[in-house]
Image (cartoon, rainbow, N blue to C red; front, side, top):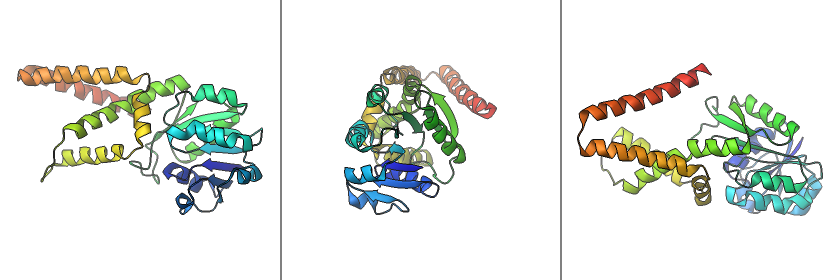
Length: 266
């Protein structure tokens, strides 16, 4: 299959490396310097080159801010039967946009990134394939993610956004709060260093991505739950209530234990 990847960033380069030995691949990137570490693929910098390449599948791997603009730019240069796809972690407005293009489409979300994941060992990572869209496109990504050993889940666009609001906004907000109140430690403990490492990774993400995840329509409810838990915990601390603290710790330990049990049953 002839596959065009839009963007030669971390995830774009990952997909190129992954696909280039089984497919004819090309990358479209306006900044030639970003293509220095792309191998075994054609390097395209103009729309005329895209038209000549005539891809059968486009994987949009640009930053989330430019996902739709990137599609709009290349769409006139694509064959009518080309499947277009994205790997964006934020799907807001994508369904409506796809349905205006006249192209078959597929949308997926690899629930990992180069910041934290070991890209050579992904068996504990997850991927979401949106159940709405082209059947053959979904089969392609299902096969691809299966070969990587990823755990695959099929959600609608709405179900995806609810999942992202839970799985990303809660740790992101918690990290923001940690980063906002932290102070330099000359001799930090292990837990502090781990939180600091996570904070550096999260804050290294694109500002627009962080914003869009937090502006997800389902995020507010999740953040409200964090606020309620903090309010309860602060009250326990203020009153130095040992009995309530014991009950609170039991509650959250059981919560974590239940999550581990559910995962082990799968």
